[in-house]
Image (cartoon, rainbow, N blue to C red; front, side, top):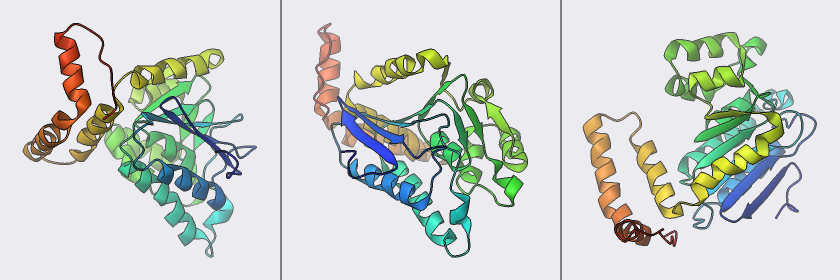
Length: 257
């Protein structure tokens, strides 16, 4: 499955999809790389076997951001369209996403990982949106940061371009786990394993239920959750199996549907 890609590695194995940035030396997101990511994401639409999507990177940096060369007047519109296509696809994807950050995630790289549902970071990971320092702003992060962290801290990071370390990011609530670099892959596997033992169908519905209520008034969000719960969740085979297994004091056997 990797043969068609030049700048990423994409595979699916035992319920885990994995997109790995592989564009040395710093995994810069140029237009061809971003197009490859969109192709990988599009292939996951309707996938009922993949329970979790991991977004990772090879090399010393996770991603140094979107290629500055693609910000020129003749390329910027295409760049923004392709870059934002990644996030629109991720938003529509019900599969839970986990970013595996073992280095610097800056600019577009930071936007990519903080758009994931969860982040596992090594102690050497760093995060930042330094765009302000070169005279632009991060179009995705200005939308997401105020939703992910306290308003004043979001504004500080956006307006100063400050880069923070993994522990600071964890304290802000945007990183789930910070682990030693030498046990990073083991910790990532353990974290992902907590998800893959569950029903893929229920994972997807739970994610959709959580996201669809964002920004809505409580009553409207609750009504949407009720509808999804009764009309879709309770009609899955896995909801029936999970409840039955609990009553019979045995482990459920998921069918992921």
